[in-house]
Amino acid sequence: MMLCCVLIISGLLYSDVALAQQGISAVTVTTTEDGAQEYSMTLQALFIMTALSLIPAFIMMMTSFTRIIVVLSILRQAIGLQQSPSNQILIGVSLFLSMFIMAPVFEEINETALQPYLNEEMTSIEAVNQAKLPMREFMLSQTRVKDLETFVRIGGMEDQFDDPSEVPMTVLVPAFVTSELKTAFQIGFMLFIPFLILDLVVASILMAMGMMMLSPMIVSLPFKLMLFVLVDGWNLIFGTLATSFGMGV
Image (cartoon, rainbow, N blue to C red; front, side, top):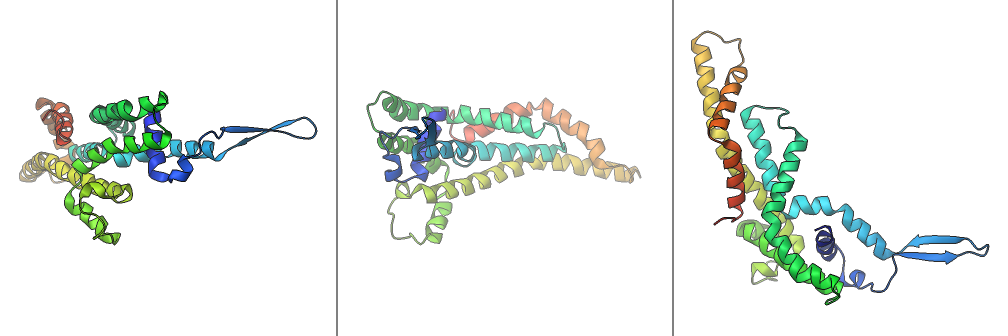
C-alpha cells in the first residue's frame, strides 16, 4: 500500500522528465584521493523521500478520511464530550475506516499498476498513469459538478474541458475536498439535531424548576450518552459513512 501511495503522489507532483530517471542509482559512491569513500543521494532518492513525506496529505485530501474525521469530530461536539474519544482514537478510527472504504480502489491499483510494475511489465511512468485512473474515478464519483465548475472557472479553464474526467488532478483534488467538507457538514447537521433537542428539553425543565444556576450540559450529558448507546449509535454512524461512499448499495 505504501508503494501505491508513492506511485500516485509521484505522478501528481512530478513531470514525466523527473519520473523518467531510469537506471539512476539511489546512492553514488565516490572515491577521494586519499582512498576514502563519499556517498551522495541522487535526485531519484530525493523524489522518493519527498513523496513519502507527502503521504499524510495524500491520505487526508484524496481519500474518504476527511469526511469521516469531520463527522466524528462534530459528533463528539454534539454529545458534549471534550476529550473523549480522544483525538488519537478518532484519527485511528478514521484511518482504518478509510482503509476499509478505499480497499476496492487500492486493490485495483495493486492489480493494474503495482504488480505489473514490480513484475517489470510496465515502466514507472505507465504504472503511475494507470494508478491514477482508479483514484480519479473515486474522486469524481464523490465530487459535485458545481464544485468542479467553480475551480475550473477560478483556473480560467472553462473552454478547455468537455467532460469532467478530463480535468487535471490540480483541479480535481480541491474540488473533491470541497465536496467532502460540504457532505461532512450535512451529515454533522443531522447528527446535531437530536442532541440539540435533548439539551433544549433539559434546559426548559431546569428553568421551570428554578434551577437556573445548574448547567444544562451537566444534566443532559448522561441522557445523551444513554440515547446514543440505546440506538447503537456507533454502528449507525459507521454504517452511514460507509454507505455515503456507495458501499453496500
